[in-house]
Amino acid sequence: MSRFKKQPAGVTLIELTITIAMFSVVMLIAFDAFLNVLKFNRETVQKQSVQDHSEFLFFLMSKEIRMAKINYTNNCRIYFSSLTIGDNIGANDTYLVVNNGKELRFENYEGLCVRYFVETDVALGADRLRVVRHDPNTNTTRIAWVLPVDISVTDIKFEAQNKFDQRPVGPSQPPMVKYSLTLSSSIWNPSTLQVFNEVTARNFEQF
Image (cartoon, rainbow, N blue to C red; front, side):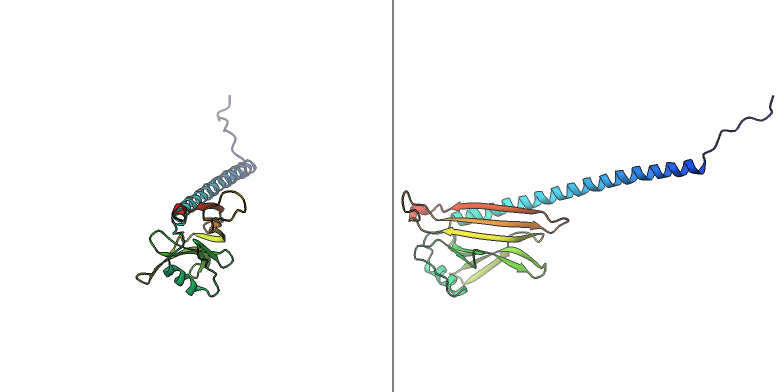
């Protein structure tokens, strides 16, 4: 009978190398899946952020545009005419679209002369939506960016109907504004959202 016990076999270098290689492959696959999930979550959050801001934009612009004064006062007429030579402001106009559909002008329910337009933010190097509200009584002007710094406007288009006799036959239509914007996020992979809206004036019964 042997006086020595049989020792268990050890792990060879080849087996160890194969094990490490298989573990590395599994970890790489798991890590890649984790990065994809993280990227998807971040894109989803950013898209939701753009959508939330677009809803805020709907609320802000729609309320002010809807309650615009019909036949805005001579004060706003003079102010708008002083901005751009050649603007044709009709006697019964409620809305004025200039700059090839890139800017909308009207007088809001507070009597302020309002402009919505896109302007380049020099600090960011991006186009952003800006609103200007001018008070003709005090000759003061408030200027503000409508959207946060990470949301830019890559395209904008305004269309306005001012008169009530646009249809040759049938009932007339109240003043209205149609606008479309393309919003883009600058965080991570750009997330783009197109916004379309149509707003009808609510003060047409005063006409």
